[in-house]
Image (cartoon, rainbow, N blue to C red):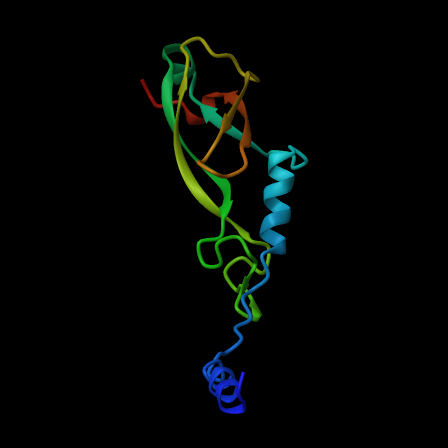
Length: 142
């Protein structure tokens, strides 16, 4: 190789720029924990109050559930380039509200408990513990 040939080959790479991408280690760790089931599902406990009439006949109650999901701003990395993500405070996940219509069966009694799980696509499950209260305070006049 001649001297001029080596100079022309080395100069063709002179305009390369190194780019430092955000670390994906936090996202990989969350995926690993979710895959290996190390992460305990979030538990939401809530009380719904029914009138005696609603308890006897059954009803459908709208319930807003907080569901954990991957941060939409950083994609679960917890950072945006070199700064922590302000939307999720560097955690990589955020909480969104999900509306669920819960059907309460006829004949439910005061103190009844229901459990179910809400699973958002590609996100950890949220376990719901629903406690039913039946009382006259919410009865409508007949």
